[in-house]
Image 1 (cartoon, one colour):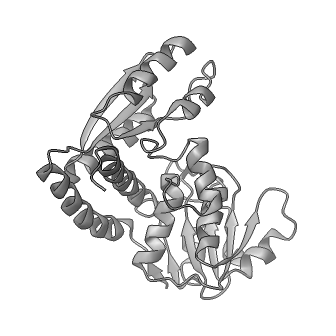
Image 2 (tube, helix red, strand yellow):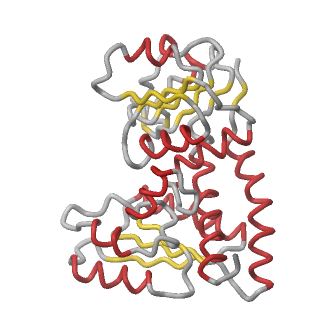
Length: 285
């Protein structure tokens, strides 16, 4: 059985560093603060919000929630978002997506201050990720994968890394972060031919397709590092990842579980970005 990559251990190590940085900012009169913008009250949004607020409070970061009605107009939505964006006491903004179908998120992705864009949705930050400019913010989930790699001391240089999934939320930005570490990247998707063989040849396999237990034991080579980014519900109603954990765990050298894996680190990355934004926006770099 491979080593289980526990998100809680990674988050605890990050918390120790972030608490020290937050305390130094507070000594200068700066209170890092996250602004959450939520339209409606979807159960999954509320669950993530509770987790994020708990993580922020544990580090000493303030949190302000702007809850908007689900039937809000585009004009009012942009007005409320602008109010949060212009608030000097807020150093990072988390917008829960997807928005209701009648709302267009593009205007606010253009509007958001790049240093408050702590989940990497601004075109400015997306461009920085793709050009290797570390002054920007990557989306939290891809960066959480990298935090796990660092914590478990997985050397990516020259490694054959396969990423299943090509979304702008995970797959594409993660590929850029991995490439910056000198990994050799293959990105797979629904039209990839010989998917099983391609995955089996990977030394590091990252599953971010959003399909429950799609990665079978036959898709993983012996000794591979397997990182599961997926969050799904199986036929029994239980939370599971994109990887069939029971079928893969004995083949992998390292494997992240779902739950208690990458998802446990994501809110810590969010906190890291808020602290960084607070230091930048307050001139405390």
